[in-house]
Amino acid sequence: MRHLVSAGDLSRDEALLVLDTAHEMAGLQQREIKKLPTLRGRTVVNLFYEDSTRTRISFEAAAKRLSADVINFSAKGSSVSKGESFKDTALTLQAMGADAVVVRHSASGAAQRLAASGWVGGSVVNAGDGTHEHPTQALLDAYTMRRRLNAGTGDLAGRRVAIVGDVLHSRVARSNVLLLATLGADVTLVAPPTLLPIGVESWPCAVSYDLDAVLPKADVVMLLRVQRERMSEAYFPSAREYTRRYGLDATRAAALQDSAIVMHPGPMNRGVEIAAEVADSERSTIVEQVANGVSVRMAVLYLLLGGAFDTSKEQQR
Amino acid sequence: MTTVPSAGRRDVEPGPAAAEDRDADVRTVLTAAEIDRSLSRIAHEVLERGKGGDDLVLLGIPTRGVALARRLAQRIASFEGSPVPVGSLDVTMYRDDLRLRPARALERTEIPASGVDGKLVVLVDDVLFSGRTVRAALTALDDVGRPRAVQLAVLVDRGHRELPIRADYVGKNIPTSLRENVLVQLAEHDGADAVLLRPAGGAR
Image (cartoon, rainbow over all chains, first blue to last red; front, top):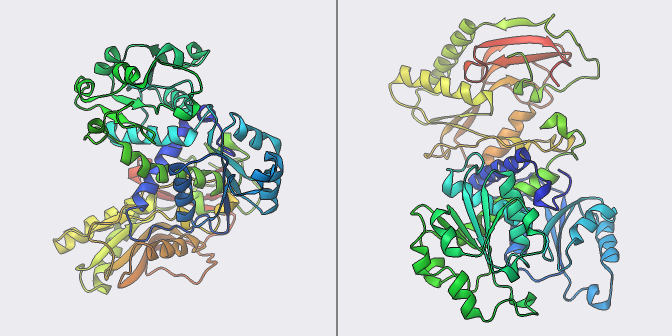
């Protein structure tokens, strides 16, 4: 692995390597001394063109626990507000010697552009680009599922995952579908037709408009945030109608299998896509997902930066 | 069975002089019975020097050091009649040669619940070569706790140290050339016990 731009770039073995590495990282995080010397002298730049709390903090914590130097860049309060282009900003970071650039951008394809352009010499990690992908979120979701359902080992073969809500604007959904398909899970997207992207039939998953039909069979229900900031058009008549048809309330949660878990990538709108009592229930992994995020991002940074660049992948894996 | 040894991870290849006929010059330097006797002797030595096994903790360095540590723990427990805490200590993220190779998969680190603070920790590995793995293990141990003392037990000492490190307990000293690989095979991983010596270059 040189870059991590799309969850679809990961082979099954690579994905499992990340999850296994994250498992070891999680073990090391139980210690009193959480810091590892592994990335000493390496520089990780968090290049955030879009607001984020948990992803940025999570990457920052992960890099710091591996002893990398972290430079945080957010578009607000930087030269971007003076009109500096993406390219010039990237070249500036390269001149400062970034070994990895973690990029979050509102434009789909920004991470790919950065990785393919050669503007930066180091690794590029996609931390969310527009409505395209968010691969580390998918990895931490898969890690959480594996921990809860498979005792932390193996792949997710045969597990039924329902991803519910605004798939159209969700980079989390796309990355999850690609990664979960690689790991052998059966994914069903559940959403009103207006919130499904064009071409969804070519994705490696099933599609349903009826949440109540999907719930009893699901091992995992992942709810997506209703993204008010991307809702410039009317995708559904009202938030209340959305909640009635696609929100996970206590009554619907009662239809789930006993072992089923409820996930949400956050930040959540309590009372819209998920009822507060479900979000705070035993099944909910929402807080766990955040904790697992640090371990998974440590694993990604370690695998990208911990060694020499992998020029002979076939030989090594 | 004679393919890629993980013991070879610290057998730095001396050059491109790859010997293709690697089966031709393979020599057995320790048989299963000899390994068995060495481990029994080391178990006795550990107890003798530590004046019993009261505050003893055995930590194996993956992969084969862990199997050896478990065997030693079994023996010490049978001699003393009480169980000995045994665990594993992965040193991958503490190595000094990380940037020379692509990132490696991590191994298990399992520290016994009783911890290592104030204990006599015996690190266990299969082959002692440059000493760099042991240096990494000592650094890794710093982050786990503060033992009363740290000792080192190895099945094979093959010489060629690059750091001021020595073993407290050695199964067998085997003089080697840098053009040779020491290959430790254990029943837990390879189906049978043996220590082999063979020309370098065939493994990778």
